[in-house]
Image (tube, rainbow, N blue to C red; front, top):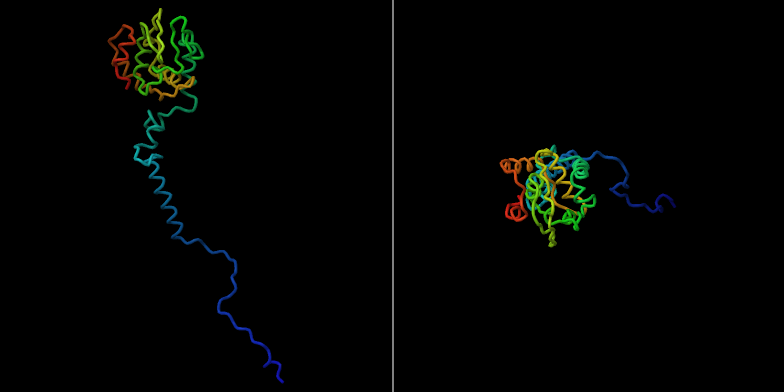
Amino acid sequence: MNPEKNRTELPLHDDPEPVAERRPVPVLLIALLVALLFWADLYVLQNGGDVAGSKGAFPAMVYFPYTTYSQIPKPGEDTEKGGKIYALYCSVCHQPTGLGVPAEGKPPLAGSDWVNEEGPNRIIRLILNGLQGPITVSGQQFNQGVAMPPWRDLLSDSDIAAVATYIRSTWGNKAPPVKPEQVKEMRDATAGRAAAFSPQELLGLPTK
């Protein structure tokens, strides 16, 4: 007998065994990813995180009141400057804690509805020209025996913006920051006024 004829012949497979190997990424896929990243970058620059269609580089609630990167203060810049101005000119009456001296008719700034207005015009006018007369702050009345002095001639637009920003962002206050341009606008609008404002008068004026 021929042993070769009795051997069981195994079937031959057309597909070879899989072999691990490195192959280049298709150029078309790379181009597609680059195009996708470029489109995503443009979308963020145009719409920011606001899918509803906010204009500018960021949503208005995040970016307000700035419109360009150069206008955004460096971290701590405004609060540091504003804090120094506050300590020098404001803390005697309103205290470092922002709680004021109620027994002497000096109202608090912490949690004040006057301070936390969305628009800054009221507090800017108040700093520029001072305040005279009884005032109701967050539902509590304060009878000021001594008028708040005006700071128009002593503080620059930048100084007033810094201290107003400090007041509106300290002691739990969360109002938007104030820009020097906004102070200048109010300074020009009240240029012919020497008298202090009364609370009733300020309440009748727009805050922004």
